[in-house]
Image (cartoon, rainbow, N blue to C red; front, side, top):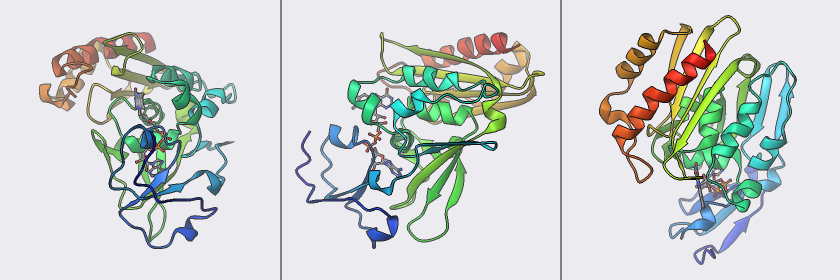
Length: 271
Ligand SMILES: Cc1cc2nc3c(=O)[nH]c(=O)nc-3n(C[C@H](O)[C@H](O)[C@H](O)COP(=O)(O)OP(=O)(O)OC[C@H]3O[C@@H](n4cnc5c(N)ncnc54)[C@H](O)[C@@H]3O)c2cc1C
């Protein structure tokens, strides 16, 4: 849609060009959400595209995903054979309720900054133990894990004007085996639950990441693959009945049921 409150679009090649931050500024990534509804409090968009960040940088340490990396580019990524979790990129992308426009224009950072419970890029990068690098307006860059970045439905730790620069996925997490389950109430609908388990080769370092069913990502970590009873107990200890996210895509009780059911399937598959 046309945003008739916008009077300027800045296209900086460096964030130093922006100067003093104003509350009526907004970072523009793919624009798929920004242009989907009126932005009455915004008069200036700051386009991130001309900052020219490389979309994907692989190294022995892992994969750095620029916040501006488009979904379509992440989908095309082929990692080294030892990064066994790379197919999870496509699995999560396909879990996204998505139009042609979102597929080609939306960015990984835009999805994470939206901080919606069903944000599939949050599910992916949280499960692969991603670390966000944030650029505050004043001050040094700071790191926050993806799981701590999202604080509630559509809320996160970004301070006023702060920019998400990149997400680093450690090589050790990319090398783990994984299993994923996703359920929507309707065909191609928004996820009611998107749950991912990862585990090391010898059954060590089992990590379960629950998303979409909860307002923010919830992670359960075990030194070794838990038994069914241990997993169920850990879910109950961490997630009370009112800890689930209730919306038109599913009641809290339904999402709780899905969390038990899908988590056990993941545990069994990875055992
Ligand atoms: C039809 C439709 C269906 C959708 N379905 C889903 C769904 O199933 N699951 C889901 O998660 N989402 C869904 N969305 C929302 C989707 O998450 C967003 O449209 C998309 O992820 C936003 O990415 P973008 O790059 O286009 O961001 P933009 O629209 O450009 O920006 C989104 C917000 O993030 C801020 N932002 C962007 N990048 C940064 C950055 N690097 N640092 C700081 N702030 C930044 C912007 O200022 C803005 O507030 C849907 C949207 C539509 C229109």
